[in-house]
Amino acid sequence: MSLQLLDKLAEGGGLSHAEYVELLQARSPALAEELFARARHVRDRIYGPQVFLRGLVELSSYCRNDCYYCGLRRSNHNTERYRLTPEQILASCEVGYRLGFRTFVLQGGEDEYFTDERVVALVRSVKASCPGSAVTLSLGEKSYESYRRLREAGAERYLLRHETADPEHYRKLHPESLTLEKRLRCLHDLRSLGYQTGAGFIVGSPGQTLDCLAKDLAFLADFKPEMIGIGPFMPHHDTPFAQAPAGDLDLTLFLLGVIRLLLPTVLLPATTALGSIHPRGRELGVLAGANVIMPNLSPPDVRSKYSIYDNKLSSGAEAAEGLEDLRRRLAEVNCRIAPGRGDHPNFVQQDETQ
Ligand code: 5AD
Image (cartoon, rainbow, N blue to C red; front, side, top):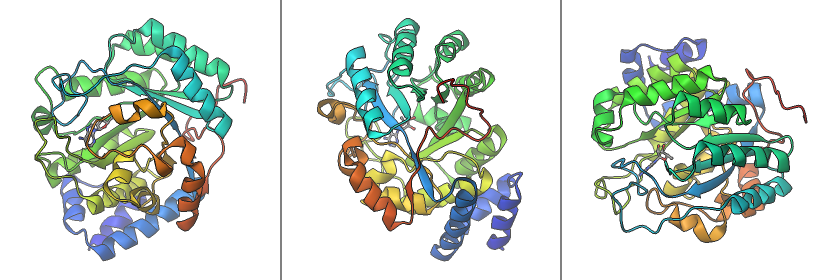
């Protein structure tokens, strides 16, 4: 019965809500193995047994928002905040460029210091210093006009997880000022501006049910993001969810496999949260169908301050300096690092330097 659901998933078009729930309920080690084998097969057919690298620069830990799950939330007064200078950001990208990175992800809390003008200047300078690179922004919710300016400055991609596609669950994770409606409007704005757009959700966030996850999958099947980031919920000790249990590794891996079958061409990272919950979390993610890894390029002395949850990895194979370690770990799961910027196949490269 559940093998039929995998067949149906692979045929395209998605499943019904009830079928997603049924598939998640039917999860067993044997079904997971079958799913992962199919997911790897699909990934390898499209991309080969390869992962694309994205150099992550965490440019600011200041945030105006107050998401209940996140250690960078405004109400957390126990965390030391930092903000990188444009010189530090550029130097981080240049280090990555020399290591072979051709995508840079500028990620941060919603920090009002980073005005459109400042981010436009940053995007332009990264593009100029790292020719042939793609710039991904992950700076939260902005107006259409702001997204337009940043796109015009040269940013090609934007990551903005939807966090949960269930409006009531969204309410339980965020204060009143943040709504799913607004989040989805941002995602549609990004899409309409020609960004390769990334959505995603937290697996096992407090109050999440299989019903919520079925809605996440239905949303992804419908919106078809070019990139999807998912990772297990990890509690942070200075948030309202400090006592909540962490998300489930096996469920996260299962969802990665389902997403690969649902959207064969999706760029799907084995996220830092996955690497943080299990010592081989990222390799297991790759075995489940992931094809992106995002090593940290931030200056080593600020990494521990970008504390969105407890026990977040920022060294070893997680760090850009750990490329050899990463290569070795990938080889163990019959995978290698792909060269190049790794655009989604639907996007023709417009960068004249390529
Ligand atoms: N556990 C797991 N993921 C988290 N994020 C934020 N806080 C947590 C947490 N406690 C995720 C959110 C956000 C991304 C940057 O990190 O999905 O979009």
